[in-house]
Image (cartoon, rainbow, N blue to C red):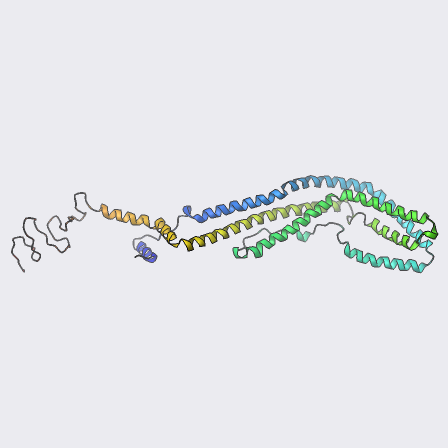
Length: 355
């Protein structure tokens, strides 16, 4: 029985190369198309979660810019007046507290607490981190055996960054209204301190009122939430929206790429299972595809070499004689068909001859 190498060597002797799979009939191409389609479907499924949110975010961005500009303008004079009021109240309270040492001790305690508060309140200003807005969507170096180790972890990290940017944007959109609330709250604090100074000194704890005045002064200074001017807020709003958008785009692309790689991994496993469980069938499929046609053509060529009158192309009869009655190599002697054929001499007169 011919082996694959025997067939290959025979093809080489006949001037033919060993047949290869026709790319047009390669099932792997079907797998590739199906995997790409699965990737597109997964990407579309992810995009559907954020499509409407991003459309709304665009409108919110425009509205937030306008609202913040207006609220900041309306609050500017109010904040200046609050700073002036709390400064006056603080000076009056220092004068009312008879012991200067008590004032100095309260000031030191206030600074100590503020130092700890500053460490806790690092969220003032832009809440979007620039280092968490750099997204790499190149998957050329990701292999199937490192799918979970590399790609899945990257998607998870980028999704966390994207969610943080979305939360930051939501917070910024609400900043104009929050600014108005903070200004009103600071005014209420200062009004309460002013009212305490007007109350009966015998029932008023001046140390407590003084501490409240120090806190109120700090809160008035922080009323802008870390944004020095309108431009700072708008820049933060814009960069945050871009970060959120780019994050969604990156995770979408990587989600599609992950689906493609997972699909190809499944296809490879299915192929292995098919080869293991249907080994004989696969052998015959490859044979029928690559060599069966050539072998059938060879049989046809051998049959068509014979003439229609019973002679082949060399002039041999099918009974082993040529047209001249000569032996065709079948172990028989040619004759004229009328007499007995001598198996040794080749004469037809019935007499044997050793010559």
